[in-house]
Amino acid sequence: MERVDVAVIGAGPAGSSAATWAARSGARVVLFEKAAQGRDKSCGDGLTPRAVAELDRLGVDISQFHRIDGLRVQAGRTEREVLWPSGAFPNMGAVAPRAVFDALVLQTAVDAGAELREHATAEPVLEGARVVGVRVGTEEVRADLVVIASGAGSRPARMVGAERVDGSPFGLAIRAYVPSTRADDRYMEACLTVTGPDGALVPGYGWVFPAGDGLVNVGVGALSTMRDFTKLNLNTMLDAYLAQVGPSWGLGPVAARPKAWRLPMHVEHRSGPGWVAVGDAAGLVNPFNGEGIDYALESGRHAAELFARSPGTVHAAYDALLRREYDPFFATARRFAWVIGRPRLLRVLLGIALSTGFTMELVLDIMANLIDSRRRTLAGTLLAGGGRALSLLDPILIRTQESEPSEIRARVDAAR
Image (cartoon, rainbow, N blue to C red):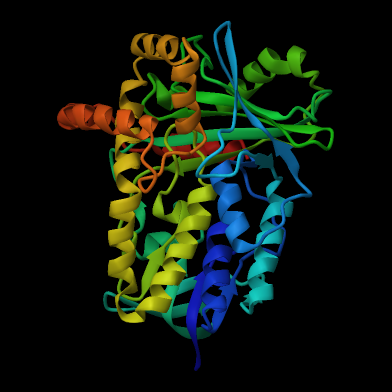
């Protein structure tokens, strides 16, 4: 029976990051991908300065992708532009189509020494409560650590119990690639006043991310805290948003069929004996914007570094790190997700957020994932304080949320 040090299921940013760092530490790593190198993934394609920092650490050259210098935020008739700040993270972002970006990060893992096995649908092998390896068809590979990087709600994640916490917020999103006369714009654009089929404000946002190659990535996302969420039609919502931004962006006809996806934002059982979940499989998605590439890259690195330090205790150390470094922000963001699900309150909050340059700086930190527990900023401090105040309402907020209905899953699948 084949034996390796680390087996990684899923070769997206999270899995490729884990494989790269583990291989660089001297571990024998096998990376399993059910598709082929360069597979596409539904995503907004935006790389925040935080993601750029992690890619710099990895040694990944992203100069081929379209550079982004800041964020443009719209709410109703108000529009503000903010440049990325200088400081803890690089003052640049990028828009990187996932088919190309994922292939680039995956090649970094291969170059580091990880063995790639494409078209390999892998599942964890359990012996009691411990994961001891992976199975692909009739073949089995034993490993000291199995990294679940197969995405939110995937079968490998479900098999180890890394599933959405029932009653927690989740997101739905849909995106399309569209020709644009402004594909070379240097700002990511986010609209915070997207409306649903009934004309009511939707807790979520719309985006236009210029890719610099004649196309823009246009999409909309909504949180499950919105009123009448079960009636949400993603295709209709995207059509309305395309009509809204079409004139200002000089949009042409949609280049390919839009793709939709679900975003669980609170996952239980993110690690256990013999395994850890990283990236989307661990629920590491910012509830404010649905972004998770930076957290995927970081969590993959953390898992590999902890394994190199102490293979026998990696799952406990990893879970402790997530609780310390990430959970406070995500818990606060989920609480705000409940709050912004109330349209009247959402209007008030948006009015405050875009009223001054100071508040816009706070919005930028939140929307660009620039809040870091190790680098205390004013935005992080204020958000943490608000989260602690809202925590008193947790019992009431959680009771207002339904489980994810099966018809929502069917509607997302139909929009792919």
